[in-house]
Length: 190
Image 1 (cartoon, helix red, strand yellow):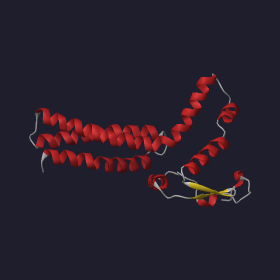
Image 2 (spheres, helix red, strand yellow; image 1 turned 180 degrees about the horizontal axis):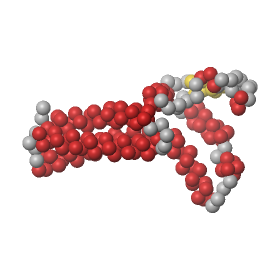
Image 3 (spheres, helix red, strand yellow; image 1 turned 30 degrees about the horizontal axis):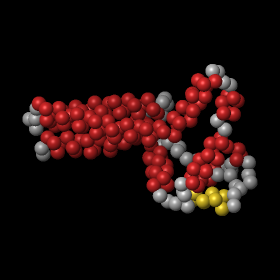
Image 4 (spheres, one colour; image 1 turned 135 degrees about the vertical axis):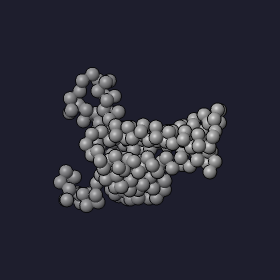
């Protein structure tokens, strides 16, 4: 195998190795920050990958500019995969945190009740439902929303739910936790 083929193979398997590593890390370190664990995993995986790429380059007796270019390519490509994975993994949690931090900074100090009034769940839900209807993902029939389009967004939601299950994380509430029509949402049947 040529050194270039070896470098490309290392880059192509790096996302699968990151996913597998994340699966192991999440199971081993259930306590602590998920974000910190993933960050450290990415740092360790990138270091290991670049070490492996360097060994592949040296075994192929490459040196000079081509060797450095291959190392730079492997670094940029695999870091790109890692950054995308990192942002997809933390996107939903972080958005809420950023909003809360922004509001506290803008207003000085806020009580929990004041933060709750600025970040109303009803307002967030209404905005998200309106966007999904605008995009054609949902349709409104009376007072009920129905899945209208099983496009890319739907597939992304399914993939996110599946990957959360693989990692052992609760991404979505189980279907039986949805309250009956007209029931108090705080007292969903379990």
